[in-house]
Length: 548
Image 1 (cartoon, rainbow, N blue to C red):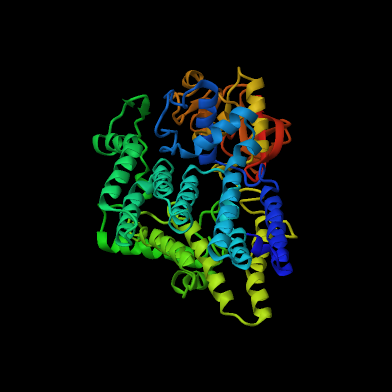
Image 2: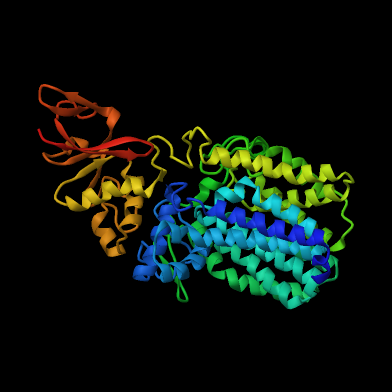
């Protein structure tokens, strides 16, 4: 690397790369423990991992599960392998909970940047790749909170880099095999990878065999290793999808939980209407979401910035098909293209959003970086080169301004939440409710959407599976229907007793001057005393106590 750093220009480029990466780290870490709020799936995942750390089993009481049954349809275990050791050392808080995910994203950005520098022997190429990564809206959004399915693309990219390093730098079959096993581990990270990995690995094996890099015997050997690695998941998939078991099974020391709330919602309906048209429309809808810059899920995107700013797909196209003189970079580009093409069959059957199609996201962002490198190599004008580098930064500046609400501090999902939306809660907002309920165990607290709220309460106040079974009217680990401890769903509001509490938006209260008390739109004649008023679910909420 010494010859890279000798010229002053190279030293300046290296300093600039380190400087902007440091700025990005500070920006990525800014308020990451408060913004965004805790998403419901993130909360459920935290409860599973907290249960394992505290009690040795998940929230359903299963030891060594290959998949978390969870309350809402199941979650993958791969992310827990990275988070559990960290939380065992530092304990649980929103900052320590989210930090491992954030760190893995930063390490991947750094690794991809270094890989490009090594492959091209050009710092400017590394700078362009770095800019494409740190200015990608998806990376910034997804790195700041934990969603179990989003760990799979990260591990996949590390494995894919290992394959590239094995083929271009180390020329090592052992490194290649280890990289393929890392890729296979992503099956433990997201259900969609169960369908994706066989397609990708077959394509990769054909490519490696055609290039005479590995023999058929070696392919069979690696396939056997991969089969053994994912065998527990194969058996699990058979048990829950074919046999549809309703009780936990054992495989060696592992638990194969039942999955009554299966993730079939991630796939199209194969039994409704014209299947061919359904598949075509599904694919078109997905690309519409990518090209218009939003999947209409507020926690995934800020329109119109999308995964990458939509006009940058032109640069990604240059990265995918532009002429590359460097054979090592061309091989890396071939692996990226192969990974994208392997997902094409799934575009027709996996319902689109930025999470369900997340295997594409990092790959497309890397293609933007390669496209920038190709364009820069063909530009002779220094001003155009500077403009090429500045363009992603300018777009990212507007994106960040929107993310934090801008100068006028406009409320959005990330900085304030959505009004009366129970899918995301700021922990500091729900703590007053949990604290008050704990101080008044003899009285019930009636609240809307108990099936969502209870999981946030468990995150703040973890309980063992045995305690959970006593608190919930549906058993341990399950979504309560009407009652969780002294939290009661609105559906039973007709049973509210004297001195019980009601959690309700302030706008639903009416002051009754004659009785000097509050009445509500949903309880009519009953009278209440205001006990607490605070910001909750992006509106002003109250806790009132029935006094008559």
